[in-house]
Image 1 (cartoon, rainbow, N blue to C red):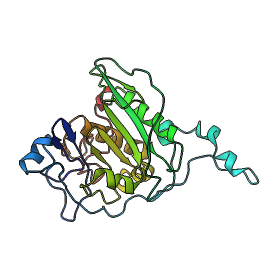
Image 2 (image 1 turned 60 degrees about the vertical axis):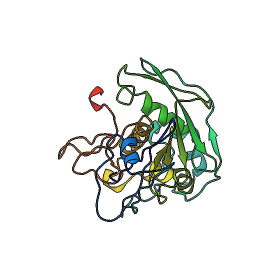
Image 3 (image 1 turned 90 degrees about the horizontal axis):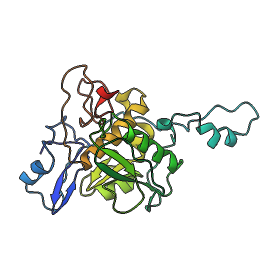
Image 4 (image 1 turned 180 degrees about the vertical axis):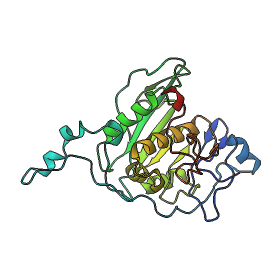
Length: 272
C-alpha cells in the first residue's frame, strides 16, 4: 500500500485507519480505499507504515489572549472572559507537550442534532493533564462537524455529539506519547495523528502548532485535521492533489505536503 497519513485495517467488523510520518524519499501512492490495499499486503490484526517527521514543523505557539496593560493582572487578562473574544477554532492554543496523564475522559453533555439526513453520533474525548481548556476542543469539533461543508454535506447526514460508549465514532485529543501508544503498531513518531478503529486520535502538538506549510493558518489546519481523521473513521482513503493551485482534497495528506495544491480543510468547500 502507498504510504499515507491514513492506514486502514479490517479485522472482523472493525476498520482501522491510521496516519504515519514520512521517511526520506518522498510520498508514495495513496491508499485506494484503505482496507482493500492493506489486506492485499497480508496484514494481520495491524499493519504499519513508517516515515520520519518532516523538517521545519511549526513551533509551539503562545496562549491566545489580549496583551495585559502594564501592572494589569496577567492571569485575569488570559482568563475565560478573554477567551470569549477569540474565535472558537483558535482557542486553546498552548505550548506543545510530550506526555500527559494517559487517562482519557469522555466529555459530558449532548449536543444539538446538526443538519438533516441519517443521524451519525460522535463523542469527544480529551486526555487528562493536557494544557488548555478541554471544553474549547469540544466546541471546535462540534463547530467543524456541524458545518455544511463537513461530512454532513447539506443533508447527506446529520451529526450529534453524545457522551455514551455507543457513539458511531470518537474524536480524541491526546499527547504525542499517548497517540503513539494508541496508534501502534503504526509509528506516528510523536508527530502526526491517526485514526484507529472508529476513533480519530488527534495529536495535541499538531492541534497547537499546525504545520509550517500552512503559513500560520491554524484555523484551516485544525478544520483539515478533524475532517481528515474523521474521514478515515468513515472509511475514506487518501487521494492526491488534483492540480496545481487547486484546493487540496480533505483526504489528501496535507500534514506532509500540499503537492502544489492550496490548503483546504473542508470536505465540500463548494457548500460555503
